[in-house]
Length: 315
Image 1 (cartoon, rainbow, N blue to C red):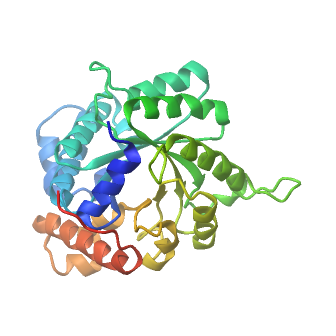
Image 2: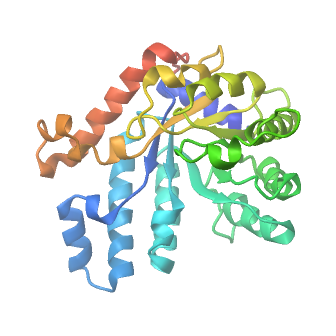
């Protein structure tokens, strides 16, 4: 079994770009035709929303498959719909895998002991019975409870050839409330987390340049991205904040290794709801929303190209 980082690097080189499309469906932003069809099929509000989220996400996947290496479903939007939403999430992730995309499930799990083991098995396991069953390539996790709570996820990732992305320096405006707190040695919390993540990444990489333990580092803090790439040379990065959150292509450049890989850059709203953006709405009417998604994807690839040049290879 090849490692997560090796498979991800291969996917980036195969597509020639590091774009990660975030699947963050919001009911009011879905194209009208999808909302109307989901409602017409009946059932309660949960069922209708889950049905719409699944169709929308599947159609996004069909547009971007072959163009980008990875998609990142946001579990919260599906979980909001209760059991039908959770079932839809797993079907969406399996659809993405069947389309040749890698899948990062953005669930930000983290807990102690046997609870962490259960989360790890649910998302990363592959026993032929549980919901894991190969539907997830990587999972986002929260380190706030300490190093011992990360280990069950690391053990499962190594066992099943999966990946992890630990929250290190997040892209939200209030990130510094806790992450920037300094200890008496003038080391911030996010720097302590980075050291832990790099140690775990280095211990899991074998002969690969990167380990299976990655870090989430927001492009909205470009100076910290430079610092953290230097501090975590063996850590694959997931870089949110590009596009709708304000970060530009140049802001993500420091996240890549000299080989042009080592990171993926996420965009959610800027791609999946491109039909609502003025520059695309003027070109594509509402019933051609998938063409807006395609155009936005190509635009992001082009914008990142000067800053990330992985060697494109054929399958």
